[in-house]
Length: 145
Image 1: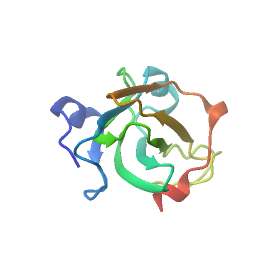
Image 2 (image 1 turned 120 degrees about the vertical axis):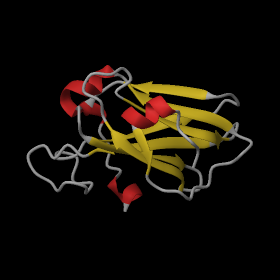
Image 3 (image 1 turned 90 degrees about the horizontal axis):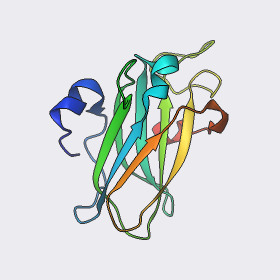
Image 4 (image 1 turned 135 degrees about the vertical axis):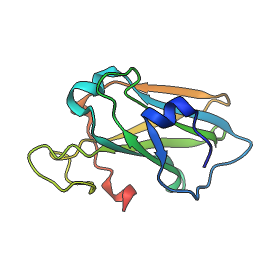
């Protein structure tokens, strides 16, 4: 797992899993959520995983907290993770517990918002910014078991 810049570490992300399958010679992925996440999810925990969709392998996993007032509301870096032509997705969930659920556990989508975001690897570094959109929820809890 890489060292996250001091500013991001303080506000956004702490490593969840030390071991990962990130490559040293690939391109970097920066995955962010814009300020639209702050209102509904500010102060809530978030877990993010980079998936190689061809193999199903989890390449890296991180966790942090959604900021209520910063833009980006969260940011995670996966250095060297993307190989040109590879097939990837970011799975992430926010521990929102809307109407039920358990703190620290990925619950059903109506309780904990979850997303599956395809990532294109074109040979260069990728910076992907998401906006909060509950209409695109997808079940990803199995990734985090």
